[in-house]
Picture 1 (cartoon, rainbow, N blue to C red):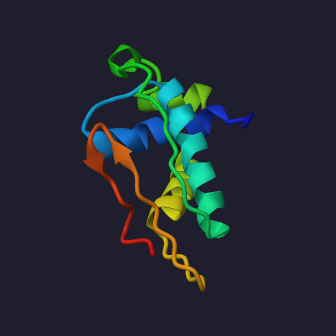
Picture 2: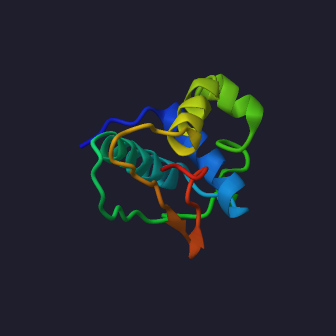
Picture 3: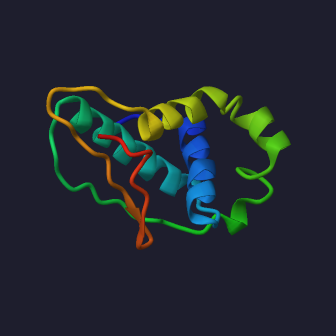
Length: 117
């Protein structure tokens, strides 16, 4: 079990929107945050494997909450640190003796991040 802060869930949902071109709900953000954390730990350890998660729901019903900047600011807070953490996981190069690659498939699209090796 992984505790995921609300701000991490919402920031990840927003990041997924940029990757997929569609809004997703916060539960999908939670799932993907956990998957990214696991992928980062595996990469750090030089491990490989498959990680599977689901897109739980559309984010269209959250236009007045999770996708409304004022609501997010008032109820969730600043997403910047969480967005930065996502960028660090998905775009940084990891220098190790054994090169690992973070490959992510979302909705049939290969989102292999930043040529991570």
